Amino acid sequence: MTDDATTGGGTTGDAPPGRGLFAALPRHGAEALSALAADVAFTAGSRLFEEGRPADRFWVVRTGTVALDTHIPGRSAVVVETVGAGELVGWSWLVPPHEWRLGASATTAVRAWQFDASGVRDLCSRDPVLGQALALYVAGVVGHRLEATRTRLLDLYAPRPVDVPPAGGARR
View: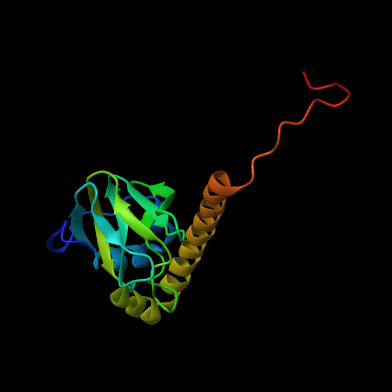
């Protein structure tokens, strides 16, 4: 996390929205997870994390947008998806070796709930029902991000079709 993040004192007293991650969890799990949340803010342009670095936290965006990017050797980073309110930022904290698979930057001012990865993993090990629900939700996010990344990279780097004349006709 960059120095552009500010943290509110302790956990939030806010109830999480009834969608996304919190809606995917059993009620007791959503309550237990929200008790671990810290309210944070990022200024536009702040870097949340870098690809390849240790993944020790994650966020649920409350307001604003975050661009997820990947490093392409010999090129600048490519934005593969932009996420907004209610969406999860970061899944690499759950899967060993706990290193970021993408990078992330705030594209606007962002308010988010931040979660300590080891605290959430401990919570999940004590509550297997919560752990399974969280793992299934994160697996869905990973699948979606993989598809978005593939689509974006094909958009940028796939060969373009050549100008082919219509069938049965000559090119004019």
